[in-house]
Image (cartoon, rainbow, N blue to C red):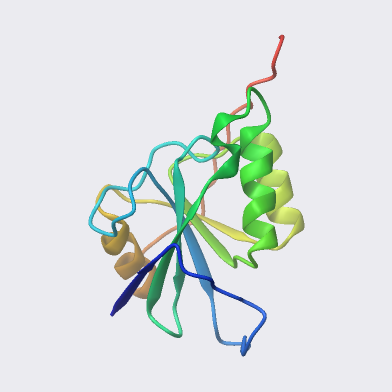
Amino acid sequence: MVVAVGGIWDHRVGRGEDRMIVAIPAELESVEEKVCASFGRTSFFCLYDDQKKEFVFRRNEAVAQSGGAGVSAAQSLVDHHVDVLITFRVGENAIRVLQKAGIKVLKAVEGSIRENINAFSNSMLFPLEETYPGYHHGS
């Protein structure tokens, strides 16, 4: 298994129908770290290519926003052609962006990023059914 950190990953090249890109919020750039509890305010997203068995970490540029971080983070995942998001929670505005793009959202399990990828690969994760109201600056 290859771990690539910060490399260039062009999802448009050679993308087959059976290839899936899975995103997981991460506080640190390590697959051995726990899944970050925050979606929009996570420091990084771990992107896993299930065909190549590669992990790539991308900075979450939305982390410093005063409001709308979840929506911006969701749009970033759309822009990176993510197929599945594994997370503990997501706001109602961000989930709309993800659903509109056809990104499947699954509930993370306690454990590392690697353990969650293994659970995903073994079809042991379930759809995330609950959302929460996002933070609205000034309200």
